[in-house]
Image (tube, rainbow, N blue to C red):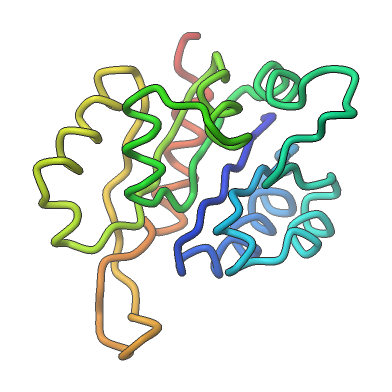
Length: 179
């Protein structure tokens, strides 16, 4: 599998190096990573590059590249997953916005696209979030359900990333889906 991993700026991004390690070393997937500016506050692009064995793209555009990097990445990927997907990213994707490298790349992927939201329950229940997630489903994205995690602020149970096994199942099922 050629997987594009799009990492956005949620505290849940601290889990991404371990998820990436599993994708590469347990499943043998070829993974390229694109990060948002906010994601770099939570996870090191250098660490992601070491684990994936590939340079990390973003958060800025590489204007010196011979082929626009978002097109190159989007054409390369069989599947894209936005993990974790913040409410801001979900809203922009549902509106078709492509004002960042991450958004333009994900929008350009022709294969399967998966959203793994990292939204607190009140956010998930807001009319805007429900509408945006429904729009993404209607546009052909697979939207995963949130899992449970411990809050970084107060160590209480909160909504978090979907469990790794659910993410892997969605990636494997998506790979089997007709293009």
